[in-house]
Length: 596
Image (cartoon, rainbow, N blue to C red; front, side):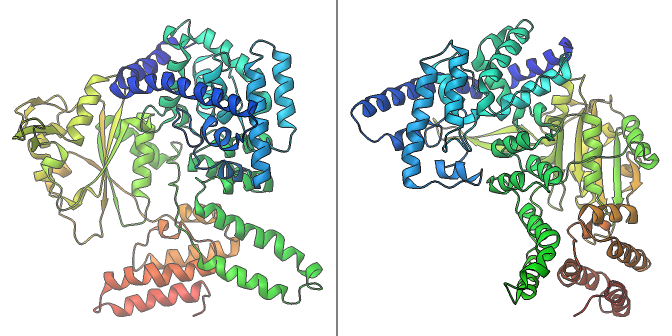
């Protein structure tokens, strides 16, 4: 085990979560939930003995659906939970399901030490018509509070154990959220914790470890366990992940890999966190690859089959939902250009990526930041605008109302740049990155103030305006700016600032365009026509390749022109250069063979 690296993560967890007020409340919640679950369970047993209906009490409150829980199901009703698996339940089904769930939990609680009997009990439930969709995340969150020998295992547990074992142990340990495998996974997790607690005694308390799993998987907290997306190859495991994840990025990656497996896709699109662009893409995929193929066979039964499909295709072309999930930032450090930018950032500490809109400057900035920091939590993002000031960026004096006396006092408050510098100083072994998007849209002399000179000499101390503190920028803080060179509302950058940054031009790239279109499933002939038109337009206007990120068909190209490019180019060329606009329009429409 690489003890030192793991210990740093655990120490961060203790300082930033476990020992905070938020962490203490989380720890107290386990005791409260245990009392609540046991009270509900005893009430259900009494009602069942009296022959009363237990359906609502079991499905809404014994299961973590409507009651407050540390590990909630993430849906408002049990029907919605089942819908994730593409199942629907009638009123009679709900009554039988409640009885089956209670029997499962009651039998397991009464057999805490007999492994063979436990497996038999679960097998009986799993093979019944009512088990579909219920996995360990929802069942173990009940068992754990009734009988601590049954550990809580959900997707956060799975991801955290995989991360720790991959990074810090000789062999990777894979748990599963499959209910059928729960007993084996429970034993596996106990062995894992027994080994881990030799190094981290706090994890002898499962409550603390479960809190750690939550912290490791929450992107707003530690987030380490979900920094890199794991996509299972096996269909059964992919279905399990699709049922339990609440991360749209995971669903996108699952969809990309398992697009040809309807059973997996059914679960993905039923997940409430599924982005709408996945659903649109899948309908398009089915139309082109399946429905068209049945034309000859179905024409005999449906005389207007072709018209039906054409109508569907038109609807899909018009329905172009926005991307709800940003692509995962990634750069190729084997590319000499990217390598040069990356090494300059490492050595010089601050760079600016400049170029026309739509050339992926912000994307590259995020990818470079991740390559430098190796941790999404050590990256801050801010976008400058004309009203942005020193008081927004470094520090300012702000009023505060005393709740007891009602008097107003004024206090110096640290802002994003100063806060990040302080955090970097506290953790000299980590790298931190500040991304300043649209850096030239603010008056930079006013925003940076006296820290202007500290940008050039990292160890040079300056005195801050309001607090009077001595301040310097730590050497483990990196700054990446992006600059739109065509924005008429931007402020000119003075020569003093130019001297403090290294500048790299990011221009329109036909190879990046070609890659985008291939990933979107555009046919090769159309890709080459788009690339040819794209290159010709560059002679008149530096059109960015990112404008084409949602293009999948000719209809998308038509919509792109009518609702985005036309307005953009008219604004840029104005009435004085209307002939240039008309020339670009002709190149676009004729080159792509579009029809009005």
